[in-house]
Amino acid sequence: MTSRTAAARYARALLDVASKESADLDQVGQELDDFLRLLKQNSALDRVMMNPAVPAPRKHAAMVELSRLAGLSPVVAKLLALLAERDRLMLLDDLAVAYRDMLMDRQNVVRAEITSSVPLPVEKTRAIEEKLAAVTGKRVSMVATVNKDILGGVVARVGGTVYDASIATQLRKMRERLTM
Image (cartoon, rainbow, N blue to C red; front, side, top):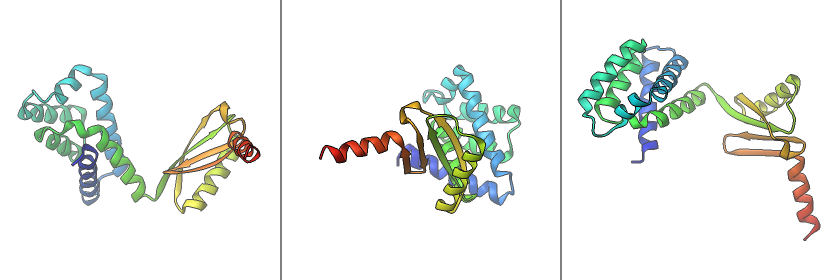
């Protein structure tokens, strides 16, 4: 089993348990993200917790104490203790990503990235968001970026699908047709 597969299983279990215990699912994800940030900001702590030479019982005890000090919800604290006990803390990054993806799927939200050559006005961004919502049948969580290389138009990435209406792509296609 790959680490992503294992992380996805833990994420699914976390989502199921948090739902059954009526926990705030967004808050659970935020706590995971905050804890990961804490680990990354404290490189010595990160090295110790991810080091396979450190015995799992010591990691477990440290994780229980860290969870208490950080004021984590019981659901997240139990998950972190379980991961430490099983020496699976290295799954945390993938687990947090999988949890967010599963939560968005459960909430019927899709992530979209819009790239344009210039910053888009708010009304244009809203119009694109509404069109993508109509196409996908889901609510859209959109991130807008600027890339002058596309010359004009817009490139939208929704999941694994790319909608490319950039001038650069249109010019490339025209060149290909003309040179055939």
